[in-house]
Image (cartoon, rainbow, N blue to C red; front, side):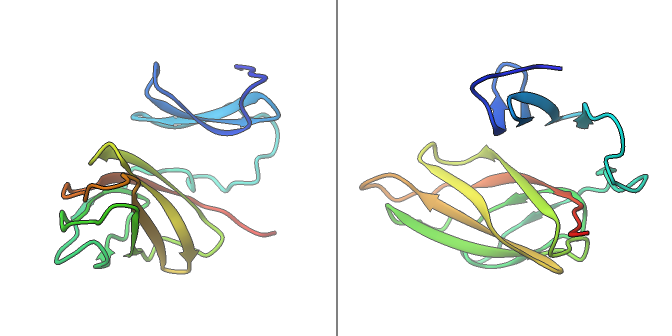
Length: 158
């Protein structure tokens, strides 16, 4: 198990093309093209099969950057609309997904788009989650389609 004194939480490992997650400096798992790998011993508290993200799909946003999309899978790819996003502006859209519960964690990763644009999950509710896309450039509009992958990690409060 990898140990790092500099990482806590999520860290994207560019060299290995994976998203690592750390707890108190110890890598406890990662997500890559092969799926989710956990380095956890003992009772993790997850029912068998709930981490299976083999059901996936893709969807393309229509009309503009705030138009919602629907994709009811545990993982997938969303291609955003390429309508102009002004400099230093945020556009938010809803992903309607019947597999999502309010206690779940949604992880997204950028596939392509303007180098100055990033995105994050800004809300999670039963049946949907919101993704906010921000153009960080100080003066230029973004006219590229922002593409991201997502995975639903099932969660619970008890």
